[in-house]
Image (tube, rainbow, N blue to C red):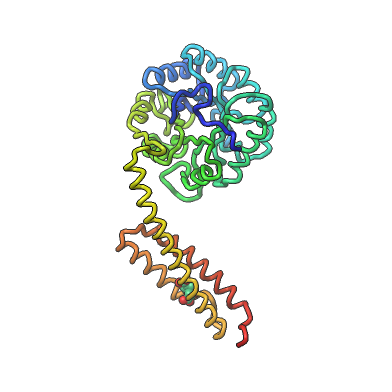
Length: 364
Ligand SMILES: C=C(O[C@@H]1C=C(C(=O)O)C=C[C@H]1O)C(=O)O
């Protein structure tokens, strides 16, 4: 997928990182038009968004205005001379969105989980030249996210971007959807030329967290942000807690410190190279230390086998698991990080020793 295009090659994009703003849902003609007008008055954004069809967890809440909303959105596009984007979840949505001049389509998290849905959308897109944004699936499954991107790519679309909106989790958290940034980083590592945007509104679930999440995304070299914006957020028909006013949107976008992917400054380049050489040396030392530890683990495994003793030793493990994070804290290392690291090390010790105790003692 080497020929996926950078955002700046999309006809409507002037500069990156981009901002996409607009209401969660188109509610009334007045709400959509007034919100989009106020956005344009306050700040320069690349695309206006509005949900026309809303996938809701349970029936009975507002499920989107439907085709009527596309007529309002088309009027907004013409009045403000700005490109528009909406979510599509089936072939009929694609057909209608294109009929009303929607410039960019996005696929929601609940669609990305379902290969049948994605294939239906991909089939409807054959022969059509429209950029498509693919949100991550609800569950933290990188293959599912990549699979959806591949299906859209296979339909002939080259203007594709991923959108990180966070993942469902059973853990209690301050976020509506866990950011799990490592998954977005993994996607970027698999597909380095794929543009990736962040939706801080859905990660946050509340207005207050939108700024720090946006800054984090920009620090991680994301190519843009999609922020739900409403002229009267508290009375919004959907996602009221996480939408911001157009004034607040402008404040957020003006506060974020934009970083470059790299720098041409020779002093910076030189110093960075120097520090990276130090990291290379330290990493080698870490690997050598791990090699030595596992050799000792292996030896303990042989003793256990010869003396008929179990591999797992709860007392010793509890001791190690309590001591190492405490030692780490004195070295100003993060306790949780060190706990996780030692859990992995212990799993590997158990794997190695299980193999040793199940191997016949070699003669001589
Ligand atoms: C290495 C041993 O075996 C296992 C591995 C441990 C470790 O990696 O630190 C600790 C306890 C055991 O569950 C041991 O018994 O000391």
